[in-house]
Length: 501
Image (cartoon, rainbow, N blue to C red; front, top):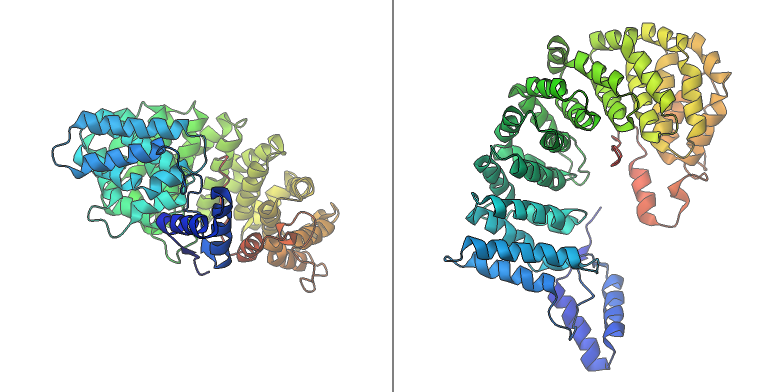
């Protein structure tokens, strides 16, 4: 999809001023007209601040604070306290701002670049670094245009390189490390360029040091685990190529997994730490030899222990099930999981949290992996009551597209080599539920086709109503939503994990 064109704030302000001067429009009408004219030309105005355009009001505190930071870092004789004071003033201005455009305003004025320059100028100042890390994190949270300024290729000193260097200056400071990894996590989410930049500039050594020096600090480990999850997750759909697979191999090769195991043992009682570490392990477990080492070194045993101990915690068990699904790509591990306690834990979690879409969805994903090319596991699943559990999950959550698709994949894997199980599912009324999901979610169309075929049902074509049922966003008038659902229609598209996890 071709990106929309953008204009600068100055260009927009000039158009507003012309409306006011040439057509005697009131300021509000001039802004509205300028917006309409640019939008008709296909211009993306998400980077434009309208609240202060051509205003006679005093300069906004966000703008004055940003200008002050830029002035200070541009001089060679500025003192640290003055820069810290300016950073604090900007943080306060953003906190007190009542308009939603404050972050955009700061970004347009050059705040992101100025804060990075301040970090580079005073990398050893603890107070300044803490303020700068938190301020940057705030500026780029849910503000992609500001975040993208961190990856500007025109900069002589790449922003992520500066962040890594600053982290290296404060390896013994847990507070700096925590703020830094929170920033890395926010910056790298859905941004392939910044994921790669963190690794390229030596981020792996910093990660290892965080585990080695701060094993007793749960708050820091949560942030580091969350950052590892993001760094190994191919969630940037704007690029065709990703280096996260190489990153995962590099992390495992650098000896990170034993450090994660040590953290798991230390914080087994804390499900919030465990869920982040489970996600980090999942991201690293990308090759057969890595999965084998996880089992051999006791990593799998720790995961199952944490899973069992925190069954009541939805996010923790969801992450555990995704990790088990990943590891089940190894057939030996798959057999061990399917014939051991893991299957009981998975089904127990799905039953305990049957109203939680994310838990049920992750459970179905794990069951689909355990059933793939493993008839003995399928036998045990049916014996333990997997068929009614899967069908009830679909019946209970008709509006959850990915949950329904994972259920279909699990059923396919269970019946394709064990055709005698078809009746078990069909007697539960699965056929009608699959057709309903097919007609509701375009994302389910291909999986429904395959599942109905493998169940021995009439599968035919997808039909004109595929993806146009009452639960489907495809029926709305928003073309962006429609195109998004069409893009996600293929079973080959990896689904994203909910932010709630």
